[in-house]
Length: 325
Ligand code: ASP
Image (cartoon, rainbow, N blue to C red; front, side, top):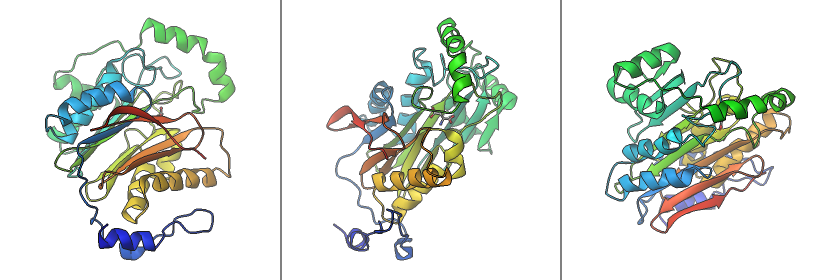
């Protein structure tokens, strides 16, 4: 264990009072995390993380870059019509329109994002091109669609008959639950990876909250809320009620807490606790984070039970149940 790690361990960042993390300003100067011996690694949210990780691993295991791996990985659930919360087959908004949000971020802290984009099966690839080919970070709505079409993406009807039927059937439930995201009506894919060179990247893509107001944008395309990467420290991504993640700058906060010495699970837990506190202790919704630290340590934490994530490293591809409050 290097000196900095020892120092951080000794300084016990989790205070005895209420589990709140006491920030250690001396630890602020980042880096000093040892590069893990076993690379690459990729982690991603929910069961659809398994096939997504498979695809990402194809890139990573050949020595490819994390940024290419995460893009390739999350495209799998985007194209899967059985995944009702991402891309093609995703649940529509309350007007029956499928609007998608996605963002991507690399080890240089370059990033791209699209929000409320319609008719495009792979918003993550549009976000990648916003990052690579424009001076901007974020394009929304019609502008994002126009950009995608200019770049050669094809318009697709994203609302499959099966999804439409399921959405119609769920209308009474949506009314009753006031569109609050709980364990049943969300499942963004957030993925973070570290390649053989120790570079981190992340991607996050979703159809957002089922039955949302038209034009609603969640955390998933917001850099800092749904996804954040700092190549000196680590990366984090989020799923669940996006409004709460935005209010806490959730993913950026998880990374910041890791900078100050928290391990990934502690950092995720602290931000979940802050969300609960901001809601006066209410726990009738779901939020969850996963994080990968620069030294290869990973973890996650959610507000309520049921959240899991997929991890793929040299030991294989497997699901991990996430601890919860
Ligand atoms: N975070 C997403 C949103 O609020 C929902 C989800 O995770 O499924 O749009």
